[in-house]
Image 1 (cartoon, helix red, strand yellow):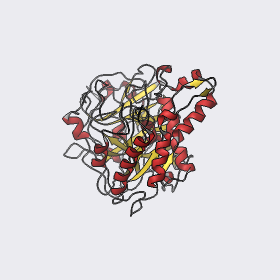
Image 2 (image 1 turned 90 degrees about the horizontal axis):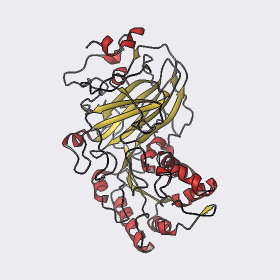
Image 3 (image 1 turned 45 degrees about the horizontal axis):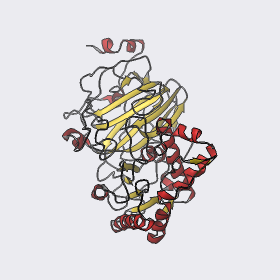
Length: 469
């Protein structure tokens, strides 16, 4: 099948090749970490155009959180690249692009470079149009795109296997394990047409809140994406499976993407990882009905920080996956610890002892711990929430004071929000199925993640300079 047969509407536009679309190397990978597309697995197309705007810009990195992107390129447009109607399963990249920083860390002995709120940090792959061409248009499912965006246009980019083959129950498949790792990802958002673009990754994990671009405007963004063999939770028996490797999703009324780059992090480009130890209220939920606040936290952080969410449903302060985190972290990394929902009937002192033990492990490894109390349950008494004492916020506060680490009272922050909403009915609009008093939906998870990010800023916690907004 020719390109014209596969993409008939490409005939409306001249197609030329950028310097970045050079020939693939002998191992099947391109110069920016992309690879040649695999065979089609079906799917439908539409006339939404994802376009390239020509040369790449290299903006100066911001030294702090920047809510208004200023490093845009409005130069002449390049070729129009339309997502494939077939599958986009491709092998993993062969490695990073070099450069970067060597083992730097927030709170460590060597400080990392300043964050890049927009633009592409040193050592990150440049976004290329040929990687965009490997993406495909897909439909909404239950009103949401595969990556969690509201659509109505959904674009799926699978830079790994195209088969929905990761196991529903542990252990993960060999393919998924091979494709796992911390990926450095770059996206050139925007193009010749005005657009609005939301970016998600993996199992409905938020990566970038919707960005509006004008015709001819492009903005470069960079991300750290933690890819695990088990998408979603470390142990979600019977839950949805997933695709191996790196998955990126775009959503909006007219998403505009001109380039994508990806590469596995190397020793020279090691990110600062923030591990999540929590329960179902913070985990990477699957299926777009439930949402844990940890899965939306990546929206709020810029490189070199990435989020590795090991939260799991049913977990208590006697956390069964703590050793999995300890096996991954290194000096200079962070760990966010939030427990209490599943410690029913446990004394505050026992919960505090469990939290202190985890903090001690982190401190011994030169990893910075941040304690967070659980989000409130929607249990109204009249127009305000009832007591949330069963969530053991007092235990988290006590452990933080005892061990000398930072503490965010998410119980109080979420309680204040629910009380502002003023009723159970209004509060449950942000919860799964509109009825689950404990678990948020993706919109509610984004709200809670925003409270945590704002608290990091307000309390001047050492992660604050790395907030994207």
